[in-house]
Image 1: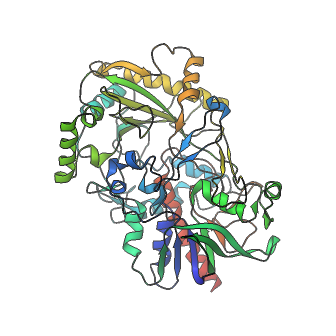
Image 2: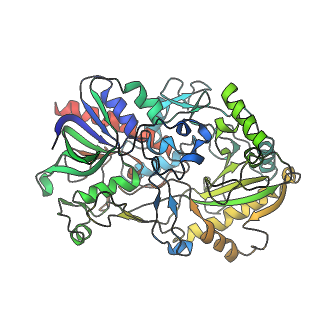
Image 3: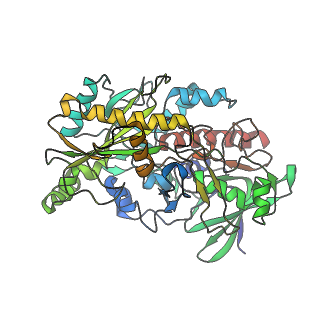
Length: 540
């Protein structure tokens, strides 16, 4: 078995892993190995912003997971796409730049996670960011990760903004500025018409460093430990590459950045987790840590769709040969148009529950409609008002099914198992309908396609949510940071009870942020890189 020693071994070259690989190797003093189970990111449709329609079901660049049958969704299994390859989910996501609310991070700090309040994390958001608007109190101008405005305004999106204003939602041109509440266009993780994944922003500039090695098609199968119980130390990673079992040793630390589904899976496979679960699978227990895989959270997406009275939607362009040629040429010549934007152009944050102090729902507005995300567009002009609850109370879990590291874990979401989540789902749909009925949209919205006008009562709207609700691709929380008995990592993201091991990805979120998760994960990795370097200096 091959075995080479590095200072740091990072598992997963996704949103967090690429950031860590760059930051931990940038001074040239320490050696870094980055392991990625998927391939290089050399597929064209990864880099064209609208291309996530091509990668949504791709058998190579997408893990293509499914949840367990969910009682809250009338026993349906939900498709959970996750990125596979350099950039991870940042190579296939919807490109939306949203940090969440300051209150999200202050809540993390209030739970005992020192150093994670809004004032603590804002500098890391700014550090990561290259905003095309330039630097300011809330934004960075020279970071690696590009955040760009949508340069072309869409007639339907402009009508949606006017309609929201008519029903009391103010215009907001910066959801990551002074306030989140309002309606407007999203900024996107794009750079001059191309996707700006973390593989592009962070890994590409660092790949030729002598002290950084990147191994693709390298599937981590287990953590190598020395010692046991309270004396266990993570000493390396076993991985499978092209059918050959290999091992890499870590003189400093092993860092799991495999995401909310596979980081807990790898811990459990390696003997770190709830002892009773591991014993039932025949996995030797290295450390009994019951919170591993628990606290799983996700944003449930409810896609309210409308037929549009004018042939101005992306459906019309994609369903016409001339339209496809036109948008292709617009991107090739000017890096503009639908190919440069993706699907969702605008957003809205507001409150629908009387007890909410800050926005509790988010909309993604698309000038396109299809029976599911990434599917073929409808044959008629259409648009989608996708609404999700920002702070779900439902909790699920991730657990290994067997000792086989190549078998996907069991993912139990438990959507709509909390009463508050059911109320918010119903009120979110009602708000979508209220917006669609605004005077500014009278000339545009011709008919509600789904849930359809026949669904009128709260029970019928909730049944729509149970029958059609799906992920908006934000699973988080399964290795939560905290101080209670179910916490997996401490405030420096070190796995409790194990030395030399950290988790750095969206699984460490104690509670899901109020918005899209990519920017927060980049922030988490930036902050973790500083903590790792500081701890290394102290121990030197």
